[in-house]
Amino acid sequence: MSEKRVFITGGASGLGKALAECFAKEGYAVCIGDINDERGLEAETELLQLGKAKYLHCNVQQESDLQSAADWLKQEWGGVDIVINNAGVATAGTIDGFSLDDWQWVMDINVLGVVRGCKVFTPLLREQGGGQLVNIASLAGLIHPPKMSSYCATKAAVVALSETLSIELDRDNIAVSVVCPSFFRTNLAESVRASDAGSELMTRKLVNKAKLGAEEIARRVYKGVVRRDFHILPHADSRRLFRLKRLLPFRHYRALMLKQTQGMMRDRS
Image 1 (cartoon, helix red, strand yellow):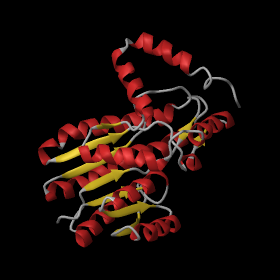
Image 2 (cartoon, rainbow, N blue to C red; image 1 turned 180 degrees about the vertical axis):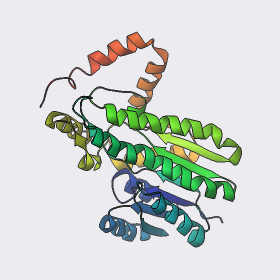
Image 3 (tube, rainbow, N blue to C red; image 1 turned 30 degrees about the vertical axis):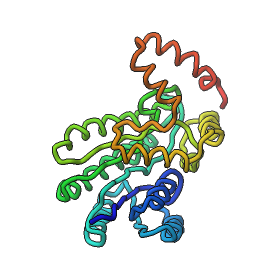
């Protein structure tokens, strides 16, 4: 089949929707999954103006939903070329203030949601003779600021999972990419859970005041996906910071982070 096909979780809003529109404009058949049916159907209508599109209800906390999506893609479109595990939520707060229930919630979505997507779609991609898994992490998976331990831990796990799979699935001709954006304007703050009002305010400000929006991030991610880059860091300053962390002895990097994050550590509750 000459027409390329992409499936995107969390595709009804934010970065997921921006990615769907970007791929659609490039001629891809786009299938989006989401838990918000109203937004999903609205997004489907918009995507149909650009080309072939489909919305499927998909809760990444349910492996059966992802399996149903894989089955639909195989039956209706003959398979899928790129799977983007994008669905995620935001958290913030101190280690002693963030509850274990909230830890389990964010782990189930941000980590196990990606795991489920990779687990379900790997057999289909292998059967097809190849494809690509794209896992949306965050710069927080590479650089770990304070008062974000739960979010950083989940995104670091996605980076580790992606690196493992890039080796494990190489002989199956399945490429793996991990996307690590810094803050950008999106609706992610809608889902934020925080241990205190100050941490929630900090997260919302960092998102809402970011220079780049989801559309520009999506275009940069698309280029990295097409190149089959492993690390996709859409922000130039993030790439510099990641290189700095890799090169500096940790004590020097830690001193730099302590200085740079003084504002985050002020008590704003």
